[in-house]
Every structure is written in C-alpha cells, then in structure tokens.
Amino acid sequence: MRILFAEDERSLSKAVVALLEKNNYSVDAVYDGEEALTYLEAGNYDAVILDVMMPVRDGISTLCEMRARGYDIPVLILSAKSEVDDKVLGLDSGANDYLTKPFSVKELLARIRAMTRKGEGQLDSSLKFDNLTLNLATYELSATEGSFKLANKEFQMMEMLMRNPGHLISTERFMEKIWGYDSDAEINVVWVYISYLRKKLIKIGAGVEIKAHRNSGYSLESI
Image (tube, rainbow, N blue to C red; front, side, top):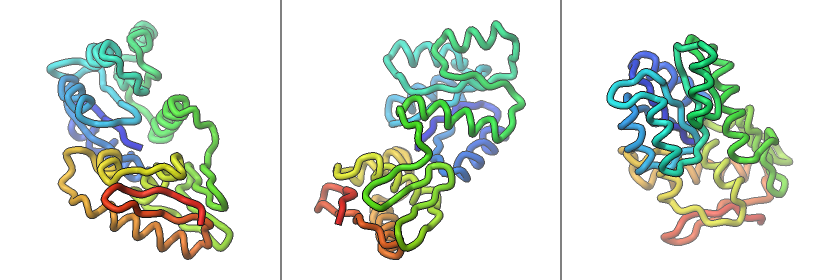
C-alpha cells in the first residue's frame, strides 16, 4: 500500500516515514501542499496524510483542491489544532479522519488501517486464494506446508497479486505502486522480488504460482 505524506517538519516526517515503512507501507514524503498536489498528479496512492500548517499551501487548502480535482483517495489530517471547530473544518473539507498531535504510533497505524479498509471495502484481516492465505495484520503468507512472514516489498507485491488473482499486473505497475515513480531502482528489481516469492510459495506447498507473461507482467494463477 502506497501513502503520500505531506509534513513540513523534517524530523517528524523522517520518523513517521520510518515507522510506516517498518509496517510495510510504501511512502513518498513531501514538505508542502503544492508539492503534494504535484505528486498526486504523477503518482498512484492508496492514502494521503496531510499536515495542516505547511508552507506554500496549507493542508486544508490542499485537501479542498484535491477534492475539487476529483481525487477520492482517503485522507488523514494531522494537526496540532485540537479544537472541535478545527476538526469540523478538516472533516467538512473532505478529510476521512483527523488526528491531533502529539499522537501515539498505535493510533496512527489504526487510523490508517481503518481509513484504507473503508476505501477498499475490505473488512477481512486476510486475503485467500486457493490454499494460500495472506494475513494483512501480521504479513504472514501461509499454505498447507508452512508459512513465512514477508518483508516489506514482498508483502506489498503479494497483496497486489492476491487482490487481483488471475489478472495481469504489469512490471511498470509494480514499480509505480511499490517503489514510486521517482525511485532510482532498476525495473529488474521486480523480477528479483518475484523470484523470492516464487521460492516461498514452493516451500509452503502453495497451490498457486506466479506466472510470467513475456514483456507484459505477472499474474497469480492456480496450478
């Protein structure tokens, strides 16, 4: 899952990005509202976190512009302003949730999970295909002969495949969703991670395989 995080306080931004990446989110960090809008135009995000007090364009103005442009991405507002009127303004401007600073790590992660579940219509804590299960809370991939706890990008790739079984996902789509459009990673990194996942699927006795489509991408298929 890919998140755009707009926060002008660099130390806080760095800490939150590290936290989210540790919990298997892919994050692009920007430092003002105008930059956030630029990234939204070029990227593909599952959620946005906006600080209110930012230079160039503040969070509320950015949110209003997002909704005016037709972006329906879930948005969480972060703010030191805790008055009821401030929260009402944020929610009425189109935010899905509002979290005041300082906040606890557990609450931030819970708010993100709740917000993105609503967006996906996905209420279950796991994805299943054939005899394969991916636990979205523990990042555990399991089948009849064992299980593995997946690393960050492995988990994100497997989640994409299991949400779209039988459907082709292009190599470019993996790069865009997981590494980000401005990543320095080479495109063959996708093949490397697909190779990791294939080995794990074999070891746990999965009844599915990741099928390669020449010069197109990959799909998850029953064997």
